[in-house]
Image 1 (cartoon, rainbow, N blue to C red):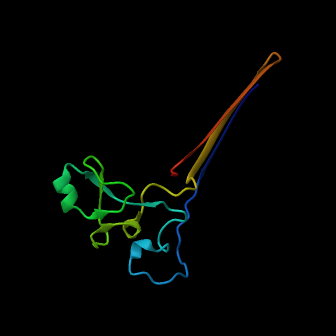
Image 2: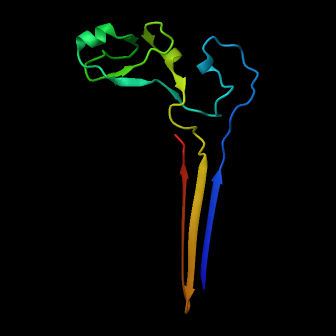
Image 3: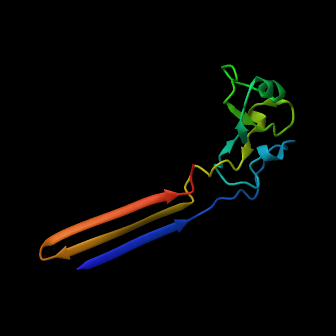
Length: 124
């Protein structure tokens, strides 16, 4: 006896409308984006030397910024890298968009074996 089974689910949760206060920074609002969408800073590369650190927007950190640290984009243009520079679209939502699984059962002359694999994709 041989039995195969599989499942696949795809779902997305776009926020079509939400009663939220107007925000001058459109990318800080939830409307138009996915539910539980990750937000983060945009990396532009690495800081090469002290001169580049001095010319770059000020990064808020609990330690000194050194050559080799990540250089981030100043999205709102205020000269400071902070939470107002975090944008939507960094990674995927924290709820998986794809859930899948497949399994196999084998029975032969009193011997029985079963395996099942499952996983998720497109989540952060």
